[in-house]
Image (cartoon, rainbow, N blue to C red; front, side):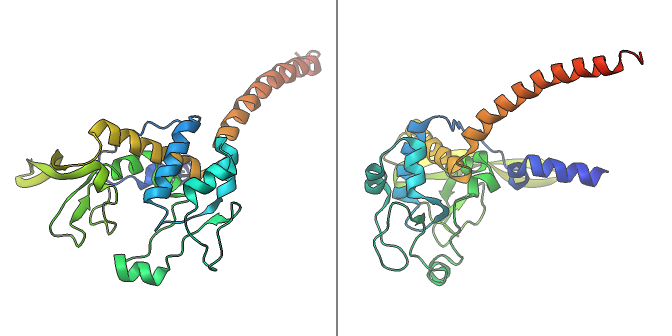
Length: 250
């Protein structure tokens, strides 16, 4: 019985199962009804993510439709390259990139993941924490490490915006064994944004990725309200009908 309950919980809350063990995840200020935030996030995604990471389950014109932007705005903001066939990318094309898996492995040591469903698989809080907790680590090939994704292969592509930070450690006693834990960060090289500006930038980017993972979720949630209202009204009529059928029995 416990096994079936666990499977049900994982099905209802898929993102929670991917949270890193022992890592505190900051709460992402997500609002999927904020179209302006999603627009800003889409531009950030195009500027900093889309050159390497694809979003192959999404089409450019779908973003235009859902956010209220014109197709020309989306074209100017997000379409910079040609498709894999070498032809000009069209507004109705899927969001693929020209980087091959072999090139990614030779450059980064691993295939670069598609980001279409990352927010659904990892969770918004994980993404929000991940993009804000890169820190300097001289032992890593890129010179950077990450709290949410230890030994990550991706360089800190947003480092120019956030700046470079180093970890501040505290020593804790675990059954007589001294263990160091990262308590926070100290800025060693300022970026072009303040901490508050960078947090807002990341929030918009994560908001877009949450939308990207399930574009119909606003419609689904709105429909859910109507369904619950219908069921509540239907319950009243069903109850009255039941009383009418059973009045002679009772």
